[in-house]
Image (cartoon, rainbow, N blue to C red; front, side, top):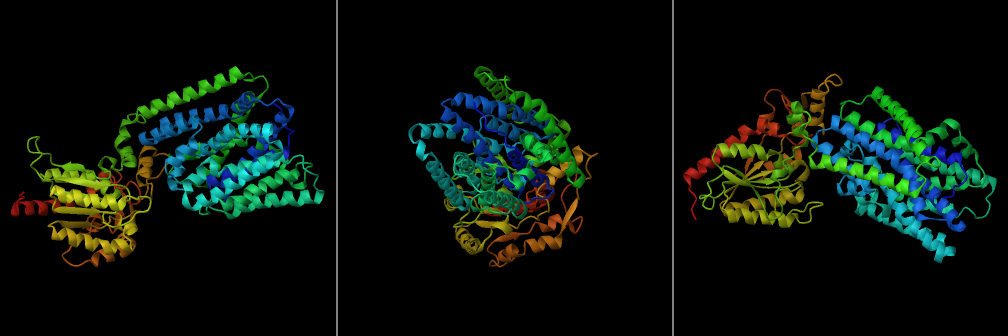
Length: 640
């Protein structure tokens, strides 16, 4: 396959891109440094298109040879990175995290990491994304998918519509950009991760490559354009941040800036091009692929070990990343890119098959064994507090989960459940405690719970279009089962909106007419860290590298301020309509501040209790509730 002439300023542009990405991720400046990925896309589109177009003109283009080059360029370094990440994951991650790492490794091996993280329903900028070691491979998947489709398209256009190739590429790019702008508001996850809304960035580079033989531009035009391009990229890195809606319209400046810079230096190097051709800058560009690959998993694994990533740690992460990148570039990338090394199709595709199958087998084994949960027996219970969310108590539309005392097989059909626990993820995470306390009272019940499922009828929930139907089915099931007590649990401060405030008393009155009593549990106090259980685990497992996090966090006054609106709405309900119980009195006993751990973490994050936390704080409360329900049953026996 033919090569284009070497352009040092493009390696310099790579350096600018990777510096922005790395410093943004580590937290050393460049709040919009993530646009470096978009710069990479433009560069890739330009270089790949230039090589393919040159071979098509010479009549020597081969899709197989193209992929031999891609295998030698991409696969060795990323394979080593993934293998090392799996080894570090075995040593550091808890079971659920290790299993998730294996899943992302499988997706990466299948060139589908972007699809995997999109389906994982995770925003790239969400806090949880900071803990995914292979998240950054999404961009490799976008390029790899582009490499499957685009060479075929360019080959067909060259053969049948050569004179219309550039207009068609521009048209497709405009459509992709328009799709990205639309998806920014309607499908933000897909917009960020998927090829159709990213293709225009690669096609911008492709368009510049196809314009290579256009008319000469003046020196001053080239100079102004080159500096304008750099300014557009730099401004994006400096003035964008994680809150900037992206990509879409906001991606135009860094993408256009990259394309303009490449175009301006196409005939002769500008002063801006000379600046980026400075040898140390070019060297960073040469190692940019390895630096991109290594910096992220290093950062993530250190975050899994160190609670507070201070400036010395950040600088250490940067230095480790640079050292590993240089080693990877010298001993992995460079040998595989030399002529003669895997140059034969059979050897290149054989290597690709062996490395891919090997990673798939390794990752599938980890996944099949559920992340090898017995690696560190001393910390099994602590690790459970990080990952357990009560999913076994989640109910789908028209179903429920039985909890509490079990009747004998012969009595099962005759015994009516005593209560229903209905709510969102807060109900799920306390269900194990409710189950235990109900058993101690000889009561059984049904759980109707799911993420975001506010327990009020006629309420809509974003991303849950079936919620009104779901809540109506819950009511139907409660009435059909003869349940006389319904316990409502939710994150009221977030989910109780104006419509919910209106519908709650309506629902309660309707149920009361049918002999059903509602118990509403006000929201448990919120803490101040979404990594409460994780940080407790890290402090216990890596004591030499961490101080234990604060055991007491938010004050009772802070809790009351946070819950003020929701509590006012609940307290405003007609007296006697609903039994309202405030759990706060069980939380602020030892101190006026919230205790988030003892021997175990009591909170998984800032608002969900762990199993240990629910037992510690809520057992007495539910003991009182079930004692009253038991008394009701003695006074008024069930009858058919």
